[in-house]
Length: 577
Image 1 (tube, helix red, strand yellow):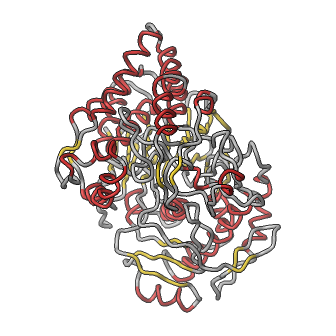
Image 2: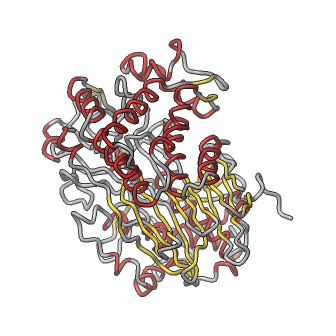
């Protein structure tokens, strides 16, 4: 029996997984009470916005994938926020910006996640908003024990909080000091904000469940929360990474006009499995492009994590991410040629570009000139990151979501509300020729990328991870570990991974690392040397420092649900019954 860091969690009624165990507990409780996978997902999201405030907040964004067993369909939810009407290339150029900054108010987009969860709960949930919010409000009031990664993060932010962001200091530096591991951290402003939302919306909604979600959206986007948010950004100047101080570009009209929406997902078949992703407003299709390329290899015959295997993975990733850089953007603004990019014939063309003996140092988008990559951009001390959550019930309903944004590192807490705005606008570009150029109302194409898999029209599995540009590289390896090498979900999660940065990064300052490959130190030394001989610039990372993957598999024959969670960072957990 292969050792795993945690047991495979097996249940017959339901299994949930998230990037903090306290969120997972509450998600499972919702399923036990008869809630749907959407109810469980929303409860975990609200919990994570408090437990992981450096990774996600309620003013962030979310892509969601759903399998609805009764309707026999897979659905995507677009919860990405849009750029304000006042956010233009001309404005940033006039202000002397070389790039859209990573912090402050100017990269703020309209919060998309709250709207998306409310609409999805209204359509596919069973519980009312009061039950959904109850655990998070209690957590905000009573607090939770600070864990090591959060304690270290807040220690690094202490200076800025004390010098510039008093509302952030008030909540996250109790007594003027960063909290220690095990210290209980509360957020009373957050608790008051959402207790007030429940109180006010219950009056507007009467006894109707659906009306409660409508009223909550109005309160958030066209009521007191929007007024406090926009008022703060228009009255307080926030310094950014360039040393510039600016008010926000967001208006009440931007907030009130926002709509999330339900969409058809994109899909590709890999060896009989239908893999679903959200559209090119995420990086999701790169996973499908990688799978299409790799389907032409005998991966199992190469051997797990062999030099030949990892070289094929890395080179396939370079080609897929080159297409992301060339083509992916908000499809409301750009005609993304997904039909061609996801075709098997196109994958054959791309596969032929991979030299089995040499690592490429080029950016090679299909149908466009290749570019010689040059190293650029200093890495920030901590790139924005995210959380992941998923839920599967006994009927085979499945949810996979990768919420993010609204980080406490890049924007100050809004006084009285208990959360900051997001800064996802940093993903957009000031180059008018770039496919991801900034345009008013445009949604940045995020790295957020949940995954859902069906087999012969029946539910099979969901998975995902935090990790920015690495998400669809780490989850690719998780999926192949299971499908090609027969690993159970926990074995597939535990296995060491690699990733490349040989393409322009999504986060400010869009760093490029030509040929660079990061490998966890558990990869054997002879494999590392073999990759170097092929020309890869290998950087050996700490053990257990890569993908924070989560996965849940549904066994159609036994109706047993199998869940796993990465031990990396310590807090993620799957739980079921």
